[in-house]
Image (cartoon, rainbow, N blue to C red; front, side, top):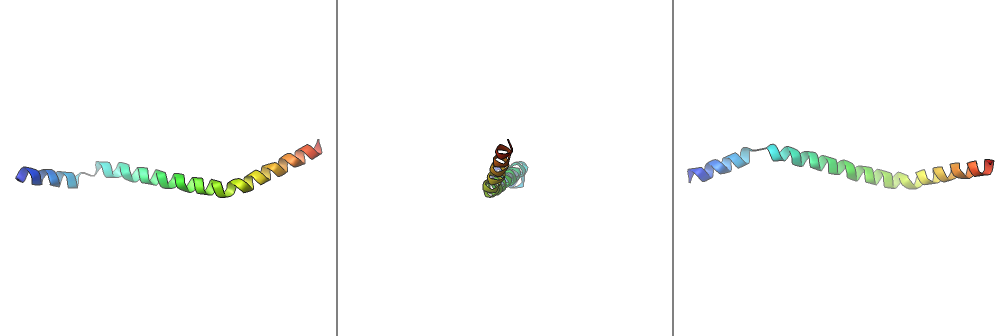
Length: 60
């Protein structure tokens, strides 16, 4: 029985995997934020480039 308790204590105290999971969650949140920001700005950016292209075509 004491071997089982020692293994449980070792499992609870081991934090190596926790750091990797935290970094993974941070990376996922950053990716979601970037996708949301680019989706929001994407339409406006497309309009800007279309306006520039139209102005360049009109100048030629």
